[in-house]
Image 1 (cartoon, rainbow, N blue to C red):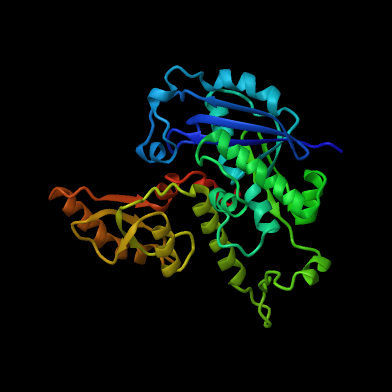
Image 2 (cartoon, helix red, strand yellow):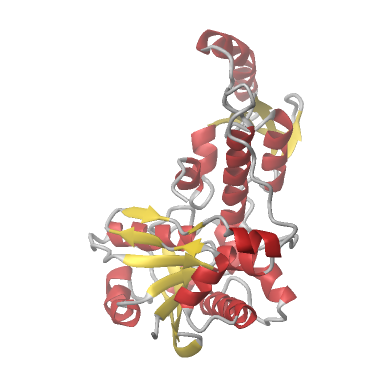
Length: 345
């Protein structure tokens, strides 16, 4: 059975999911590349954030005479109609597709989704990183990172390499061998692809299969190990969604309490991986006070937070522009950060 797939990659002008400025599409019929297409797109709001420009090098000047999304969509839909959409960290690209269509009042047809990051994790377990550049380097795939068509082509080659390794004739066979289920996008919803537990035969064949934590203790009380594992996986997924983009790069921050249900050390590590320098207290270098969440009562939480908030107000009066970020505002700076934190991944 021939399964048609469209491998896509978006670049965005800023952190908004509706700000697509470049799109690359590689169409596969089973494991053969049969068509490629690339567009520069003029965003409706011509704001290109410095962080995004540093990543992909596309500026407002480059897109001034490019078609807007509604014109690109007319050309794109016949190319991807009836296809499974594949991308690396597909949740990000699906969110951009959905957000940009919503901005132009375009109803997104239903598409199945698959992710080459998940494919790579199952095809080559135990590696140190599964970003697009890291996998491409290990597979000796040459490409220009953060060019939409180059990224889509590299993503397609990763899928092809995984199929060859797994001896899978088509995408459906690859998903079955690797234990993957498809996600889906339709109108205003995105459900991300997922991994499913290996069969008993596969577990025996792989002595290093991941240990599954117990959900209950011997006395019948719930175990927190599964919850901790989920929060760490969620944090890892948020970090993976921004890959080379670090929204807090070079910024000095003070963290109150913790983030995303992680412990203090993991919360600090999370901010560090976003590029931040985490300080124990405010000084003249501080850019942000990040308000995490506390397990204590609301009254205790308010009391413990009031002092640093007052310090920020005082420093602002004295001319030091420190900003206060809530956890939600921090996640909004990260592509798909809020969606992943809500569990839509």
